[in-house]
Figure 1 (cartoon, one colour):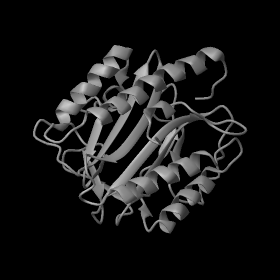
Figure 2: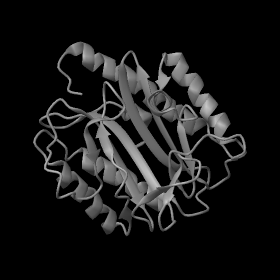
Figure 3: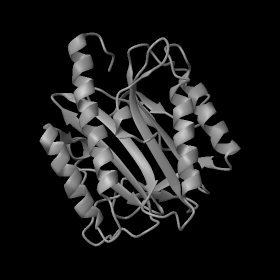
Figure 4: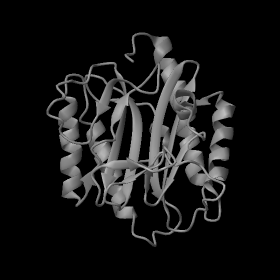
Length: 254
């Protein structure tokens, strides 16, 4: 969507506060021995307190309030009563929701407890790349140039990007135009970011894979060549200068 009036800005800020606070609280609540379903139920409670509704459930019938992916799962992991979190796990939580007709989206990958499996380097790279990408976005910038920046930075850190997972426009629905904000230079994409547009910018930084494949559950994505992936995501408003980061309160960069 494009922000055209104050009520739309207020609506997007409220929806973004709901998803950002939920993500932050879920990250703080997560601990070894807990099931991913318990963690999802906690997120559901917080979203409900805001009056927000799960976006993946509303849009696609996803079987959970939030997406929780662990270790080799890249994204869209289904919350489960049988999946128990362990010390050192690479955990990704993606929280998106609708509130009063406005939709917002954010995500965070983090190590649970001590970094015994050496995932922190990947996570730090993903966070830094997202920050650099976002602060290079303004009205008139080519979407493909931001993709090139993300891929170039990933290579500098010794990583790859997932080419079939992308950021997207958001606002009055979960996925809007521009439909694909890729993590690499898509030479066929001549689209430019537009001032006042609301977009969800995501990194998909991988150790070995370049494509994500769907498991038999129909939702969970893993790498075509295995390995691990870190994802970080903010919903922003494009301006002529520094973007407005609507989900910054999730504390991903703290």
